[in-house]
Amino acid sequence: MRDVRAGAGRGPHAALYEADERRRGFCSRCGGSLFWQADGAAEISVTAGTLDQPTGLETVAHIYVDSAGDYEVLPDGIPRHPATLP
Image 1 (tube, rainbow, N blue to C red):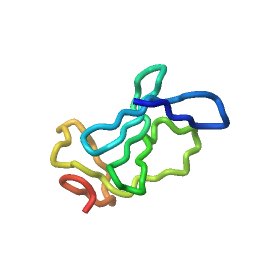
Image 2: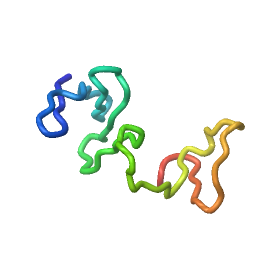
Image 3: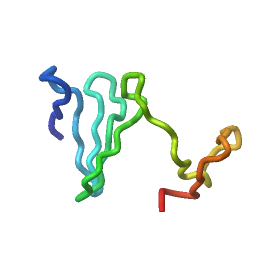
């Protein structure tokens, strides 16, 4: 584990754990998930709920829909994938 710094020098915001061929970042204050990265991947997936609004983000697909609860309502018109993105 090591500290990850984000922002303009405001100190450590996340604890970084490296295991199972992926890296995960968690808030050092509340323990919330901030990001993850697969081993060797150039992309880092950031938890959208951690961003200030307006984010400018839009939903482009639903993933893991085979695991969705019967109470979850998924809007029409957006691609659905049984597991991860193809």
